[in-house]
Length: 157
Image (cartoon, rainbow, N blue to C red; front, side, top):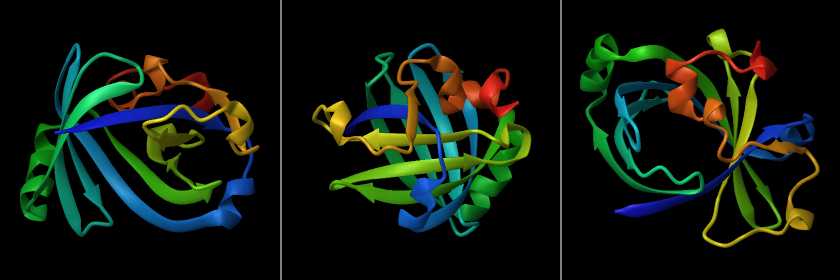
């Protein structure tokens, strides 16, 4: 079991693009959600798939279990997705020794760009990159399960 400790931010500029090291096209969908738990499938670059179980209701820390699954089975399970299938491209961007995952959403969520920082220690605000906008950690409407099951946040509309 791993602990997932993360902060989420809206992205306020495109200055991060020149720093991107990798990009991964992701299809992500949910098979089940309940308060404090989710079951999701993520297909990366049409080549691999993972099943992820998340537990906990804290905004910054949850228990996470992740397992590779056969791609063909993940594609089959698309028929059982609840809500919308999330389309996004994830970019890896390093800043001051920290890895940020910048998700540029497509489809119905086009226009939404969110950066995640997963780290066990508190990162002081002065260490954060200038291209980050408002912190949205704890704002449920910006969590992927909410993006799949709920409305579209104004920032993406």
